[in-house]
Image 1 (cartoon, rainbow, N blue to C red):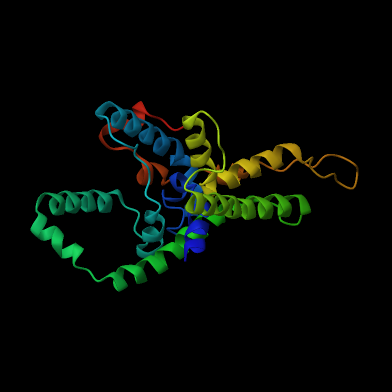
Image 2: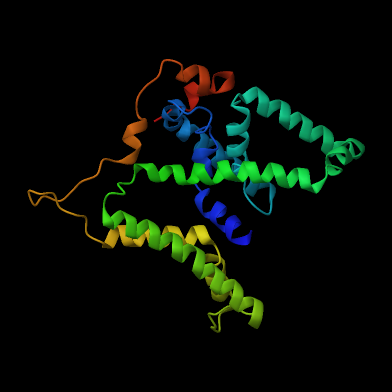
Length: 245
């Protein structure tokens, strides 16, 4: 179960993109995601600025569980989010009503997580469809980065569990914590190794001897739709103040 959670964590890190609604429809809904991606990331940036101003412990982020909920309910309306936020405030203020949710049996929550985590894992791995897996270079980079992303954090966690300290020992405690945070995150290790290998391993060549140049993965999502303003326009005329690039 722990290994499965690490796989989910590693594959669902691109949550800021996936949680926008990439899994709402199986046809062309994903084509609209890029159009609203800049607005989503800009809104998250404003949220982080407000979080820092109020002195919160951590910044705001998109919940990866939304990917599973969108895939299950097929509902990506902002009205649903607003009503859900109202329920959260209501249950948070009135503790007696919040106890109703706390009384849900754990097996029911576990069953829901089993279904939701399956969608979350597939949403993260869905981005790999833009890689050409007919090339040995791509297979090696993806496979090696995923393997190291799972094994290196497992080694660090096992070492700290037995010795009580990080494998890296220096006179600077802050540096030891810095290394510990990086190498205990499966997604961070896998992303670092994948980017390093992608930048160092030379690309293949065609039959004519020319270097193969792969099309940027986002070009497949740059098609325009007439219903884009209807789906992703910001309320109160904010779309004019924050236009999509």
